[in-house]
Image 1 (spheres, rainbow, N blue to C red):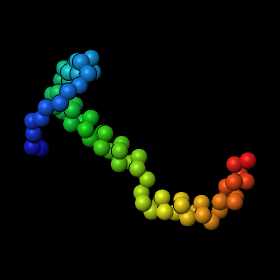
Image 2: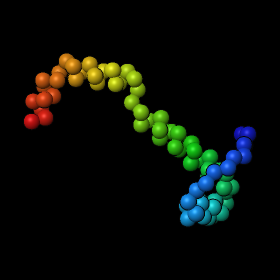
Image 3: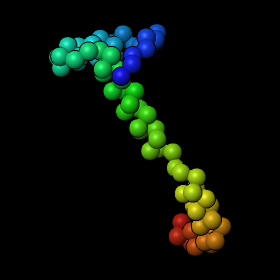
Amino acid sequence: MKLEKFSAQAEKDLLKEVRSLADDEGTKFYALVNEAFEALLEKRKHTKPRGAVIEQFEASIKEYHYLYEKLAK
């Protein structure tokens, strides 16, 4: 793994807590930062519906809109 330095800002208390967690776990601060980045990217990947899913949803609405309206009542 090749590391790259960067500059960022964070809330003071949050940063203090993450540094403390790194100390408690006997790990490096950057390892927790990388873990947080990976978790964020993984979470965001799974929150966006795929294009094919959206297309099927839209087709379903067009075809069954009358049924959905009745079910909503």
